[in-house]
Image (cartoon, rainbow, N blue to C red):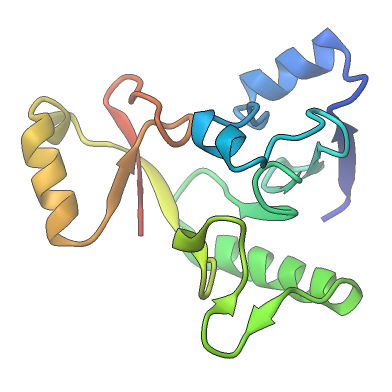
Length: 165
């Protein structure tokens, strides 16, 4: 998991563009996060870490204190999950996560309480993409969320969607 941390404060335009090109850089919060005071003192105290292989990221103080992301191309979900579990266990040895007996792990947004795990895949679904109503119907049937590949409140690019629990 060896890698590099990039603080948002003082980030060069070249580094910023590289992180945008890699789809790693998070944006300042939307109007909902701003209304909830989640974006105070932006960009101070915020940054992004990624390992050398660019398969593991940590967003620091984006919405939550930490957002851990394990990802890779292909279909080896076991490897993605093992990497995430290893990282979570290593971090929790040093920094305990806030946990409530009834609510589970605590997060800024109440919709993420509990396990706080959101599993997603970026997948091209051309037939469903051609019929947005059908895509939403299928997603609702299986309690899935459909987003653009650049996160919440973004559009799909090239028929590729982020599908998650």
